[in-house]
Every structure is written in structure tokens, then in C-alpha cells.
Image (cartoon, rainbow, N blue to C red; front, side, top):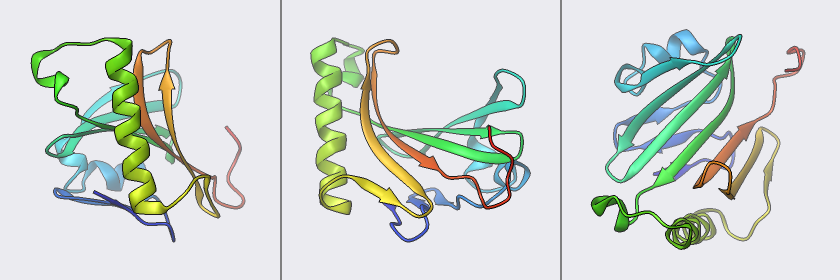
Length: 141
């Protein structure tokens, strides 16, 4: 997996994810065809997929605009189905280490958006969150 600092594109073993691709074109892409689509609230849809071994990805669109991508890297305890909050913090450390190796020291703020590594205590999950800014002239969410 690779994240482009210049435009926010994501490169996976199964294909490339371009952030300026609208929802319909994503659905017809190599990655999109392997995704499971789940409608959420009005105008929101999320796509879940495994773009390469050991990586889960969730793509969030609002209407036709890409808003964010959530990336979760598997850790050894995922094989056994074991879960604890401590293990989820271990996953966050894996994410943090990977981001530092790929992108350097945080913060990861770019003209196209930002990247964070977060632990969500309500959702009980650690993820890399890639948030894309709206294009100029786009309606706010």
C-alpha cells in the first residue's frame, strides 16, 4: 500500500484508487467491483473492500463526492478473533509506524486533504483516516 502526498491517491495490490473519481466510476473500477456497497443516511453510501491481503478499506461518498477513506491494517490477533482495547491500541501503533515510514512525521496536511491515525473508543477500532477536501465550487456537506 502507498499513499501519494501529491494528490491523495492510494495504491494497492488490487489497483489504484484515485480520489477525484466519482462514485459511478469507482463502482466500475477494479477496486470498486470487489466492494460491497451499503447505503447509509440520505445521500451517503459506503463501500467496503479488501484491496490487498491484510488491509481493509471503507470508502465514504456523499452523493457523488468522495469524503473519506478508512484503512485498517490487520494485526496477528485478528486471526483468532481476539479483541481487547489494548490490542486495538496496538493496531493504532502499527498504523502510526507505517505512516511515519511512508510520510514522515505528522501532521499529514495537504492541499487535497489530510491523513490521521485514530482510535475511536465508541466504535472500538483504530483506523487510518484519509479525508479529502471538497473541490473548489463544490457544495459543502
